[in-house]
Length: 454
Image (cartoon, rainbow, N blue to C red; front, side):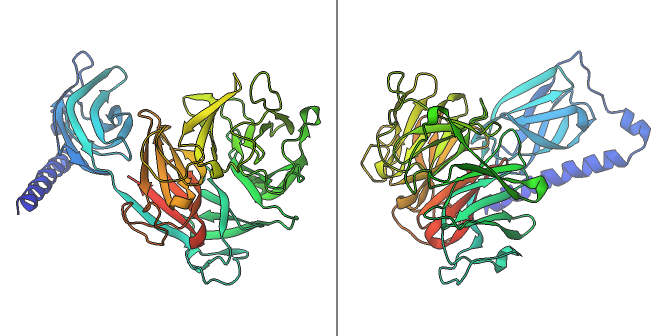
């Protein structure tokens, strides 16, 4: 009963405020001019705000002084995230809490170019999570989608085998089994097959977006003997183009059939990086098609990195220092870091050669076949598809803590819902769009899942 009364009081307050704003907006010019405008010679002050707890799009009333009456001149931030300003009335304003500002938010108001003030009261942001299925989910499907279909019409006989990425336009790219590549657009409710590969003992490897040209989606194939770099050009309706890579000193990294499993562009130099299953790290310039092998140390120009075996499905760069790379080695059950300047590497997270599930500090946390990794939209964390634990893990870059954010560790299944009940079945691919929405290639469920944190 008390919760219901509080909720009713909140709604009554908001209704009164909105009514006042509407009344003010409908009054004549003399009435408008009676409201004090912002005085750049005086400070902007926040007296209070209500409520002090809420989630995305929560309506928050801020009271204070010297806000002015022009909402286009007012900016409100929850931590570093800008909120939507609905209306301003001199000493009051109505705003909507933004998406993913952090669990505890300091609210600040800026009017014009110079005046700003932060409140000492904290807004406690309620984080909600939900896992859903975009497409697929039937293990009994026969055949593979061809052409262009609605998402509800598509099911997959084979499984997504690893790389998944999303471009700036919301198009999701994913590789299935040995030869199929699809483009999925959730907003348009469409899935389109854009490639079918018929090469011998190879499958798509390392689908990746070009940071310098967002219309290009690059890939290589796992078989090292296919020495081309491919891309799909959005302006040309995803026509495939390829060219041979020219390796420095004729040192081609890897010679196996399934040696290359990842491809990631470094935002600092614009080269694509990957690690082979034999333990070599190499890079390719997508503009010149030049390739080179990177040394394990300054003294070992052809040494292995992170052991001389083990498949790497995940490769990301530290958002604060792109000279540092992190890569997963699935069968070693850990994640390594590699310094591009000193050519040294070390274990970053997990216990080498020790499969398991344990959350906590980096050096004690345990993984079970970590696969693809991605950095979140805020550059605060690395997310990992922890395949044989059937869950999604997170490494917080500030606290250096590992946690489980979705899925039930060690309990494979297929269930949508909140993160504490949702189930996956050996997820291998993971990517995050600019809005913080995560897309997951859920292998044994034959599905592409969506994980939204708000």
